[in-house]
Image 1 (cartoon, rainbow over the protein chains, first blue to last red):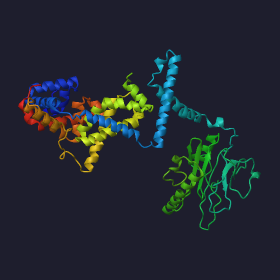
Image 2 (image 1 turned 45 degrees about the vertical axis):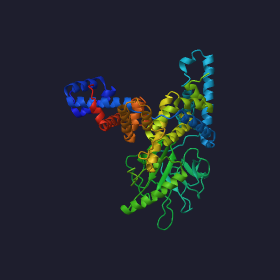
Image 3 (image 1 turned 90 degrees about the vertical axis):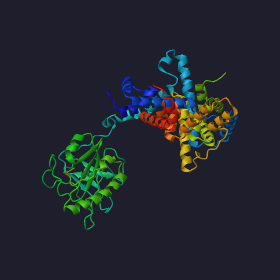
Image 4 (image 1 turned 45 degrees about the horizontal axis):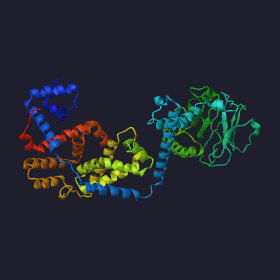
Length: 337
Length: 196
């Protein structure tokens, strides 16, 4: 390969140090034989290196200085201020870890003649750290992988695919429903009281009620928009008109308040998804239903955005909702979800 | 029985302060030389040396046992010296111009040696003087690379590791430093050019 002079001159320093590859060194040598200016340049650089190597006078201090220095260093170390507590703890833990690992190695080496084949003294602390990390992180991770249903001892929630959900709102106006209430599945409609928020299926086979009891099977939270008269609309999701596009469900038209439902998917998750159609955003064992009916174009959209910003904080207070779910930037209506 | 370096380091890790003294004894000249070459001032080099060994004492538990202690010490020394020079330049107390002749000034020592020894050839003494001056007049980055490569004998990879930069950067700095030195020492280089 033929190289030009300016490229050769950039390689001269490495050529002198003999750190070029064989091919590059051969190219440079070939070029130098044919090019007198580059050869002169290389010779000058080589001579410069020799001058520095042979005539540079390195600094040196008299022995008396080193004696003074050692004494001064010793005095400084002895009078060093107490180490910060975290440094102290770190030092102590390092010492203890070192001692333990050394003793463990000696023990292993003493009783296992093949120990040296598998455990080297220098690597032993790393083995211990690795083992600890495995215990601390991998085991909980594996435990998480156990199917939720196998750990759940509660009876599965029965969701009828054709059910129509109706949300009834108590008269505690202005307060988001569900702030302190979790929703449990009740046994029968007769157990619900009229003053409490509840979601009732139209078929009457399933009855959902807000209670103060701990969450067991799932929960749904709603927040209603106040209308101009200050009343809280009582209807969120109803079977009123038509059929919802793309699902087997009745349509979600005529919804005049925002419904935000966040529910743990029951065992029959397929049925729930079928029930909620495309309006469900699922994350692991959880799902969020966000329904918004917007009428009136831009003004309504702005209104919705204001509402939604309020909802975000609300939901964060209420639930440990994964942020991925809440990071939906634009939602115009239920179908676009 | 004399302890090996690895044993001294292990003892120092475990808090044995007496293990520091042999390490200081072994490396003090190297640390001083390096600090002096970078800072070009004895007082600064003394401070760098103190800080370096204090840091070794305090941070020995962070030293990876499979690494070379000498390279680790080089890194601490170079970093301390570079920080010192940067701080000094910020304070505009650059000592290059105000460097005075003292027992620690290598050029001064050679002048003194020349004066006291009539047999030392004047020409060689002058050459030593100009070569040393030329190296000292390099920029901080170029000087550091030249010192580590030419005088300490470290490889490009080791220097790159110490300075936390790419190996190509080290090569480039070395190349330009040599070119600059060649310009500074032109009369001496041209006087006796020899073929490769």
